[in-house]
Length: 183
Length: 258
Image 1 (cartoon, helix red, strand yellow):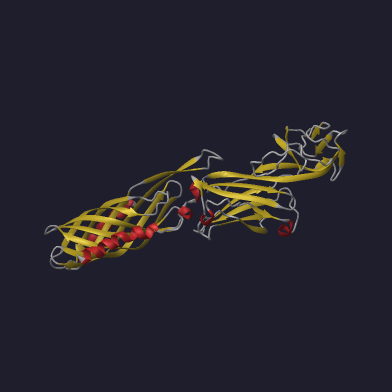
Image 2 (cartoon, rainbow over the protein chains, first blue to last red):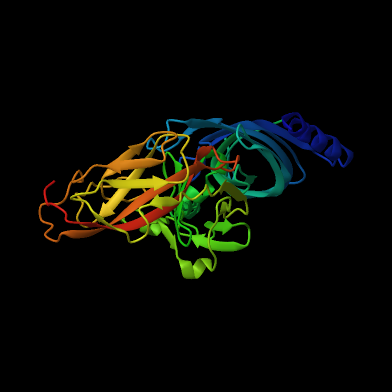
């Protein structure tokens, strides 16, 4: 699954190359963040990190792709001591690949509002329940800071929907900081 | 500056949303939950308790998390469930099913299945068969026994393969404090494998000092226990099911303080 997700940026770049316009600008970077999840002892991941890349279509729209790994979680769940000392360990791995459009609305020369909408193929793997994958809409909203002519910092909230161990869905919302450079 | 204030508000939004969530216990995958079932059945009543643990007792917050007991797949009863709204209270979550609800006599080998319907649509089934009911031979029902001159002889038809216990309960008998689901407050007599009778010598029962009457109604109890199978999707657990047999008789000429 992870290998397939790594292919997403390549597919994206291949597709966009066919529709290349004047003054195309590619960008790539790294991203990291922390998740806002329930404090429910189930072991939702706290952190995330990944790579992203994109192609700027015009001054306000770009196509973007991203691959993100969440911090792995491992938690023990035990029986009531009244009955036994048996415990089980739940190891969880989360990752997703995103592809979609990013819109940017400049506010002066340095800052801009930015939002992203597309689809994310999220993958959840648990030592006890197996693998669950799903493709669903994913979005983000935040601010962009042009720290140099070709480098940017983006701070935003991102949402990704996961199918979890109990086959329930969970929208993981995260605060995310990304550094990208154009080339 | 206004834009930054709006952005800060947006960044705080998820914390506000996730901080007001429902009790998360319904998110626990069943593979992290241990189920413990205890059922005691007479021929015309059932007492059932089913609990779910994962580090602490799981308190179900969702009304969609339900559990049922089915008997031979044709009778279905909803069992009480601990819910978050009752957490911390000393509410008894035991379910009692009486003769009027059962409509027919329970028999050995009846299949008792506890069904756990989760809010995510998963259904887990734990099953057990009801063990044989012990039949008392002596004393006969309502027999009067002069315990000042006769030994109390209790006989039954089925030898246990493991250690068991005979419980006596009556207003005249010195109480013990029951700490288990059987909830019998009276003297207990250990029964060895293969044993099919118990003799209690004349005046050998301890009678309450305050008991002034010289007759007393006493009930003998046997619990024939079997173990069932917990659904394999659970992390583990126990399923105990007992057939409960009783015999009531009258002791005469009691001597208080024995």
